[in-house]
Length: 125
Image (cartoon, rainbow, N blue to C red; front, side, top):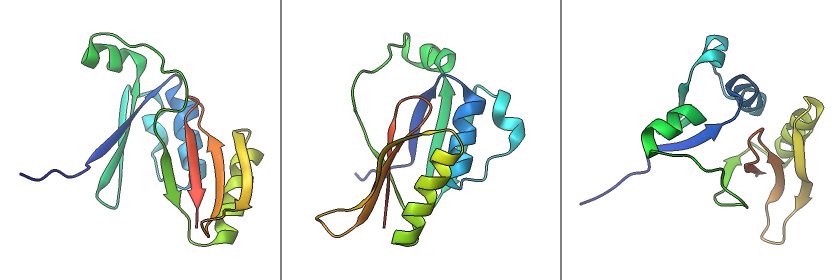
């Protein structure tokens, strides 16, 4: 038996605002998806899905907002400069920077931003 990571799902407060954040990260997402209750995008064989709270409640039977940092999404950027540029672009577009770019002791250029739902998103090269 083998398994493969196929999809990561994110429960969202505001689909339009959330999708705008991920567009700012560089994902191509059609504008008409802004009013959908479920949206999926594919990148490199893994899907990233966005569901409204209503969809999550229908799937899980209930929905309680998570507290604390539970899981990390980390996106590989093309270069250390791209980490800085992506971080700056996120902040300039009104989204929250959690930790400005720095040179991590493990050898990567690293930054952390926050998506509109409070999820911490790592950027690295």
